[in-house]
Image 1 (spheres, rainbow, N blue to C red):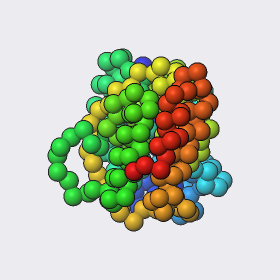
Image 2 (cartoon, rainbow, N blue to C red; image 1 turned 45 degrees about the vertical axis):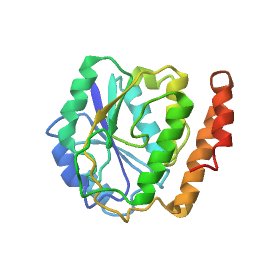
Image 3 (cartoon, helix red, strand yellow; image 1 turned 90 degrees about the vertical axis):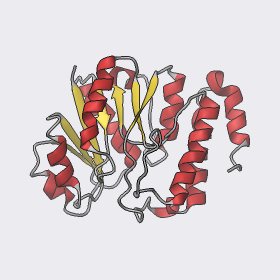
Length: 248
């Protein structure tokens, strides 16, 4: 069983060395996708024994994910685990993902920050929690899923299953396209609990997406558009989703 750990980064000079030093305790198969960092991140990555995909300009979180899937397929990995590089995802959780992979009962093992009732002081800003809740409920209601966290980036993906998808959403709305295609291709999804850690309440999405209402509207637009790509599967769901865009 060959497992790749893929880590998208963008201007992570504050965290990248510490995170990579920690994850190397658990695996040596590490790919970093540097999404056009303009700080010291590229120089720090050059000092690490990891593979790196470097975007000359910022192309978006979704594009980094797409590149990770392509790399894992090209180099014949069986699974790819993705995690963030800002210390929101604990490297110590990697063995849990390895164990879940060994059970071989899912195509997507999705981390959830909301499966546990443990208290934390690192709660994300209220608008982000609200949007996550609204969109996760819409995903569940439309796709007949039971997710508790629709946006967590700490996941394990079966590489052969990812080959079935035709992903193109390059930005932060990537999960909306991903969940539709996962269900359309009958992939088996399982959630596992991870810690809820949020170190930087001022972290920016960039541009118009910094506005919560515009971000929510964008997510819904991407979701509705993707549903229309599968009219035989989601004909009724697409109508309901489009009609519900003004709710919440």
